[in-house]
Length: 397
Length: 164
Image 1 (cartoon, chains in turn green, red):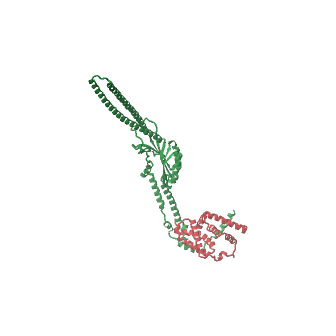
Image 2 (tube, each protein chain N blue to C red):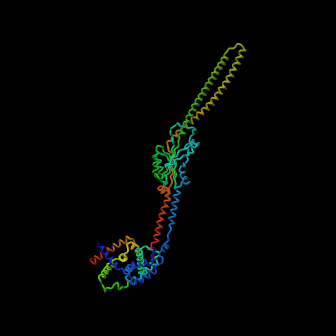
Image 3 (spheres, chains in turn blue, orange):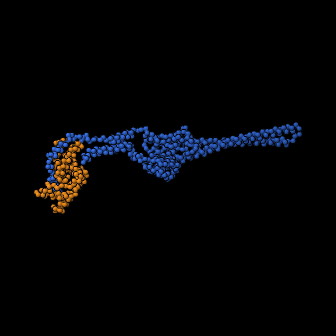
């Protein structure tokens, strides 16, 4: 209330101060003479500044959005690169590549399923695998890619996770911008292993790639091979037995013959002969029998040689077949072990800050940046215009 | 719409008494106030094309800004000493009105220079606070706060010294 009173007091005082100068009319006329003819010249003196930066940034933003909306060849190439799988080294020298066999690749991202061709084929490939066999023998290859800004730290963490999952680190490399850890883990630990690997960097920076290879044809091939080798071995053993039996029979016959001849010679030597002609005949007979003994001994020698040769051959075949059988059984065991484990490699890629931000704002990030710059440029230009037309600032007082 | 001679003539009649009053109270010299008034208007006419027509209130504030700046320039030249003006200090015909005038001026003299300036601009020019803020080149909120403080200070002086 008192403020109101003093306000009114000052107001009255202010009104009393108002007065015209003594020579008002002279001054007024003098000033009016100075009035310019066209004060609308303001329009021409105030430059209308074009927001060139705004136009440029807007154009670049639109261009970026248009480019990003078109599936380009380069982007296809990038997508394709994710499915290039490093060739799996054969686990055994016998698993040499013979045929290309398709394997199914599944990625964590929708629409990324594709078929790749593994250039290695570890087992003989059956021409007509039995389709009624419904057993599952799937070998899983797990090849995730992790994106991080701390490559070395993440590589160490991956190795720790592999070992904690009862797995084995086969090889490990790391640099400033990339790292690589190849591993083997038990199949029953795969899910928890995957979760732990993903948790190292978070789902946004984790690209999963799982390849599954059907090993049933290999299993069938091994089973066929085992069956065939078993049959061959039995046949060889049977043949060997026949050879031995025949040999023994032949030797026995030869021995009987020799026994007979020797008894005949003994009889002829013991026989009392009264006629010279008969004695001469016995002598001839004994000589003939002795010649026969020599002939039989030759035959026995020949028989023994043939027998030994045949027996050695068949023994070698049996030995080779048994070795093949053992080898194939080892292959079978390796196959089962292979199926029960998951092989793979973790690729660790360094990610730039730009890519980092792009992960959270996917799409045309550059376009949004240009858009933001365009908005800033617009307001900057408008502010500049306002400043330029600020008559208080323009006064050169 | 442009400012022609008729408009300027109307503005002169409306603004000049306030501006002259302000200059007289600021400079304390009627002749000097008249000179500054003339200079102010001449400069305004020269800069009129850049100002255009932004309304009477803005034009009035603009003129006060020019006038204030001219006063500063005058003081900067070393002509700060205010000559004795008989008409301002003539005590031979002291009436009730004159007594009131002296009474207010005594209160004003006890306020700071800034507060005096603010009160002169507010009550002689009769400009809105936003325009005063532009003249003084400060924030309108600051003008409002300073005005409130100046009035409170004046109230205290009135209460303590004159027991009103």
